[in-house]
Image 1 (tube, rainbow, N blue to C red):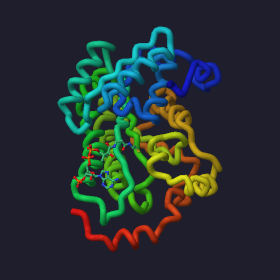
Image 2: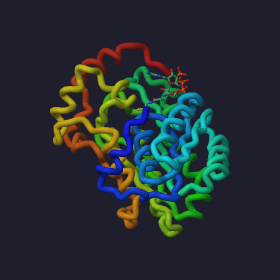
Image 3: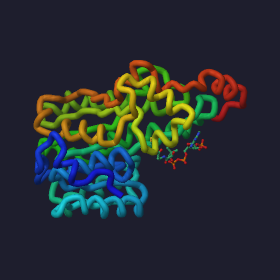
Length: 289
Ligand code: COA
């Protein structure tokens, strides 16, 4: 079910039809955060193509999202793995065929799990780097012609994990540091072509797969108390930042990271209370290669 509805337009700071005639291409668009980013854009007039590995989940999300606006077109392209640039090229071709163009790209597909270094195999590290970093590169690669033609904008979904050392997250921290570096380089290289590139770094966002998978229930209260704004983020908070970064209001903004975390990273809030005991005991096992 969609998280946003027409009340988003009525009560929001944005004008209806802000994105009329625009098309957004979103990898991971059926997942919690990227789906709500897309919903906001659709409610404000955009059409969308959401891309995912799971055919059924992607098609269902697209069908539900196309109900958000009377003339909305949302297509779901499943069986696409961002690690495979050719499958993305096909998805781009299909999007242009069905929706006519691509103006905005959200590189949101990501993989994550908790693992200490000793249990993280070389292949596990490579899987996350391949999905998060190479997948982000491939997404821009495949959409580049459209971005160039339409003087488009890119948002990479990053994180705050690499601003300090977060245990059990070396793979994701390394991948997201790469994503930030990629975005900065693209901002500089593609700026003269009229293309903007920015990152959004979500903090602890309630109701997401990431929080469900990564934050054990006993840690959740302490995350709130360590967040300067004293609450979890919502997917709508990420959607609002997305609207800003694609809107004309940010037409002079490129090469930035918009952190949406209530100030959490300043206090190292994602650092679990399990540290260092769990690491010491995990380090006693035989290493996994
Ligand atoms: N701890 C340690 N290693 C793990 C792991 C865990 N919890 N989960 C997977 N791995 C390892 C696997 O053991 C494998 O390594 P090996 O060959 O040395 O045994 C490697 O990661 C690849 O696993 P596989 O399941 O084959 O990869 P995949 O490409 O199908 O899946 C993942 C990619 C691993 C990132 C998977 O978690 C995924 O698909 N996630 C997508 C959704 C998601 O993570 N959402 C969260 C967003 S915050």
